[in-house]
Image (cartoon, rainbow over all chains, first blue to last red; front, top):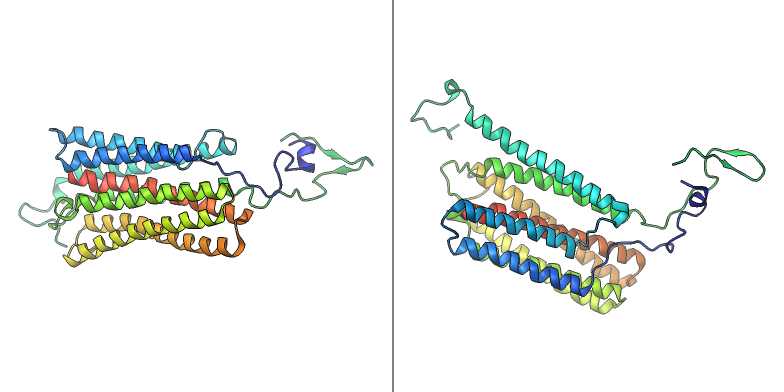
Length: 132
Length: 208
């Protein structure tokens, strides 16, 4: 930090003014139209029975969700890589990494715990496993 | 930061700034609030992971195909999506300094948010009424926790919105109120992003 900054921490913006990213009417309308399209597609797909393969339907629905989340972040949350000197983007990246570790790790570990349960510990056939 | 030591004209060494640097009030709010949202995002990540693990354990009870009504979910999604753009319009009026317009669009946003909440509460009471409450199976426990937490966030968003309407009426679009409305804007749009995850993973994937 230079001496000038210590002397005057707010030399390049007015006192009291806080810089939130701002959107224009065009941003909101574009975001809304894209969101409507990206909502109608997955709902229409699932409600009409979807593709022949359930897996293909699931991928299409997931794809729409991911694109719609990005649309919301750009047009509604006005995210950009330069905001706050890049720290909003850094914290988002960190959160996404933590999120992936938590979600993928949980599902992976729990799936394997189920799949590799020792046969001796399983209840004998005919006994309802859900009963306490 | 450089290791430079401030030296006063008298030659006396100064190891700390003589005066506390004063930053404009709320200058760290945009980043601080964003980090709060990210921590909230992690709460939802864990709830989604829980739902991912428990979502297939019906305990002999009803599954998503018997319980969920997609038209209702589509209606709910529409309410939340419209409330997002109406909040955006409120922000546009705020930037122009138009207090009446801001209040009008905030009111419209509150109506759509309330409609979303009512539809969700109707769905919950309907499920509990037919014996598919959170105590029925692990799937329903995870479902009520995830969707209920989102609903609770929307509830607090609505309370915040009501408080802001009163604040703007009383004090006008002051810098502090603009900052608060900006934070609520981030919160409101963030809840919409979480809802995309909910309707995709819980409702649509459950019905495939």
